[in-house]
Image (tube, rainbow, N blue to C red):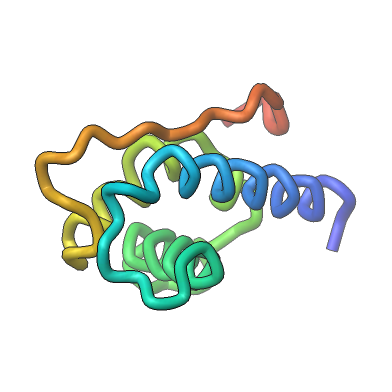
Length: 100
């Protein structure tokens, strides 16, 4: 795994923590709380990729699109977050991939 890939996972982790902190009051069906979020993030990305594991690449875990669209949509579809809830992405100010 490259350093760039490792950084993508680190940034994704920061974004996921921030996303959860900003939206935890709207999330109502997680028994494990924040500890379940990495698994949910993976499932959201997998669904977005059509369950084609070859399309699941590290940058997707750090992409703004993932936290602004993919994850919120998955949470709503799974009934984990209220449909009408305003979701905040919790952007982390880091530019990892200039070409995305």
